[in-house]
Amino acid sequence: MTDFELQTPKQSSYDVVIVGGAMYGSSVAWFLADNPDFNGSVLVVERDPTYEFTSTSHTNSCMRQQFSNEVNIRISQFAAEFVKNFRQFMGNDERVPELLLQSYGYMYLADNEPFAQTLKESQKVQERLGAGTKYMTAEEIHRDYPFYMLDDIIGGNHNLIDEGYFDGNTLFDWWRRSAREKGVEYVTNEVVSMTKNANGSRIESVTLKNGEVINCGTVVNASGPRAVLTSRMAGIEIPVEPRKRYTFIFDAAEPLDRDLPLTIDPSGVHMRTDGQYYLAGCPPDDDPAVDYDDFDQDHSIWEEKVWPIIATRIPQFEAIKLTNSWAGHYAYNTFDQNAVIGPHEHVENFVFVNGFSGHGFQQSPAMGRGIAEMITFGEYRSIDLSQFSFSRIERGEKFDEKAII
Image (cartoon, rainbow, N blue to C red):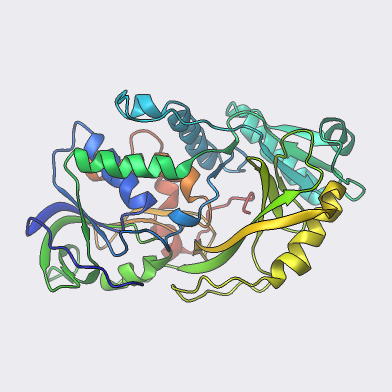
């Protein structure tokens, strides 16, 4: 990381100190500042004001209703509502742009009966909650999307309502800007240690890299892939680590005649329309934790894995040209690949908003709102997010979500 000039906070004490100012730090900050029942002071400490190496800067900004667990579906439904009514949620500020949710949908393809059955079961849950997901046979998929090669496919789930792509970075930019205008203080600095009270039940202060000691009422861990580095300062081990994910942008010599849904191939490779281009991505076959500053690309993944798979699934993609690519980090929850949020049971004013494992952007409106409610009221009031508490990890009870990409 480039060394930035460290900034000193204006005060020596804050009601809430948020460690990390990217998507989640800014979501929590904005929802706190926007809540008329919260009248406290908020400090956001961000180590990299350019956000160059954050997960936020490497997002693909996708949104889906296609989860198997009810609470995850409700979280995405609020995200869709928030994006489609962004200016209204931002107080009808005429400076705020209207955001478009491009609903070309996700297409989960199943090449075996057990997975097809899982898709059918998930579709029933989604339909009960009002999502537009439909299970389609291979013949029905071919009718609507004749460009797929489906010889090995039994069926798939698809949804054209509130599912696709949105401009997540504009949402982030306005959360950060609006939070500042509402009184949230952002500083370029780094939290390097925390001090607890005598019985270890509360964080009393955080120490910044320049030696400043800041007293705090609540500490929010919004540190993305670095979540465990922050939690260890409070004496807590959280199973979140950086995992590398690759994104490829390509041009097709023979473009498709309609939008390409975000297609999840049985191989794990995914692809979708991206403006006039196409986007593809995947995890590496060998998927270890990586260094926090490791964003090196493995170009063999494109040549040996991604290109052959997408050219097989969509024969028109045999003649394509790679135009851009990058590697980003998932804040990967190794326990069950779902969020860890809410207060710690024992260090009661240490609050998690971590471990989204690639779901972060689409879940940020509901999660930011929920954490703001928890800090303000001591409870979740809009969506009960208690299933994501850290205590499930201590109990060894995994959150059951079958639709993990």
